[in-house]
Image (tube, rainbow, N blue to C red; front, top):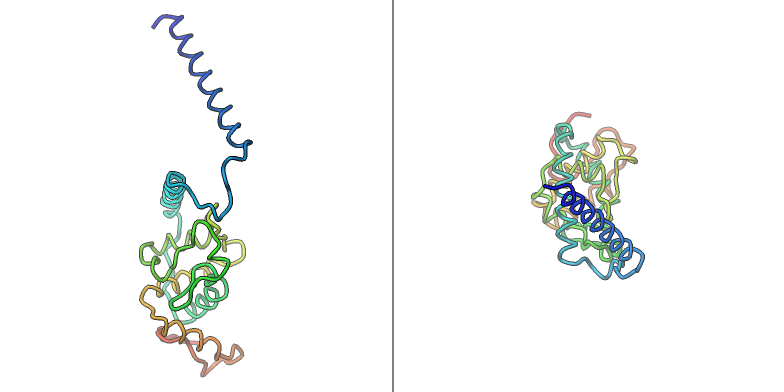
Length: 195
């Protein structure tokens, strides 16, 4: 390749980059793109965001420690957190997502249907770190890893849970006396454990 051909190729590359950067800036500052949650994503935008999310999680999930074994205390605490913080967006068996979840884009997954498609470590990573541009908050700054594992272990029960089963958890939690040490109740299906 001659020196003039190389110079022309380099100049063409620089001009192309400048034009692309100017086009990107014009697009950004024009306000043409509708960022409202009611407008939804384009098919291409949805595909790009889904691919970025999936690859990002795949790259990082290997750093998640092995989960501790679930016991009834962990499941009960996980239910408490899930019922208080997650139902509004994700719903639960027999419970539709709330007004906040209905207005989000992308729509939060119904975990009683989709949790079995994710690994335990993926669920932990997402719960702990959240998802940018998806409305999923990071619980790592406000919850211990042990509490997050409890939420994850409870979420893993959701796909097999009927609306009546979930209601049993709600009623059991509502009737439990947190001051009692012995003779207290646990939600149905929790494994036996010592206190």
